Length: 273
Image (cartoon, rainbow, N blue to C red; front, top):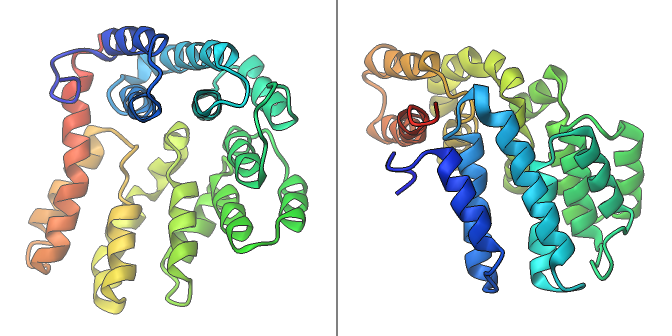
């Protein structure tokens, strides 16, 4: 309904957020949380997105506070809050969650990294803090979280690090996925804009020189999915009709499928006025 441009982000957020208050099924809650995130980051216009983020985070904070201590719902809502924190006060509350402010919420290694990555993408951690966390959790998963956190830093250097490392043949698949997760942070779309041209310039060479698995991760993982502009639409169409006109069918299919989300987002955004 929402993704088919039948309801605006403002209306969907109002209805979905209100409905969560009486929902107890973890699976349904998880789905609605994801839908709300997509509504704000993909289907809202730039002019309205900040206020929606703040509203969403406030709603998730209230739901976190009202959830039973130690419950799955408390965990889901605390993660959702951290993923949508926007104001300085909200970011400080994420720091509080990391330090154990929510009664009953078990802060294990994975959740610590989740909160740290959220803080990192908002510029609220230091390299030293992340390195110290890695020293405490120098496991396979800890190293992957560290890569995601490194790539999630809000600066062009972090994005370039991730972009270039994703193209490295010697990088493990799990590391490549972790880097993509850190690179693609919707609140950093203003930084990601500078990688749009580079992405298209490397499409054919990556496809020709890498294995399918590595090349496909580049194509789908680094497509500018969060740079929701007509410029990216035109750039994609230009590649498909120009340099990529005679590209392998599988490559063209992956690019077109990646573009589908952009087409849908721009359509739904027209309702958000």
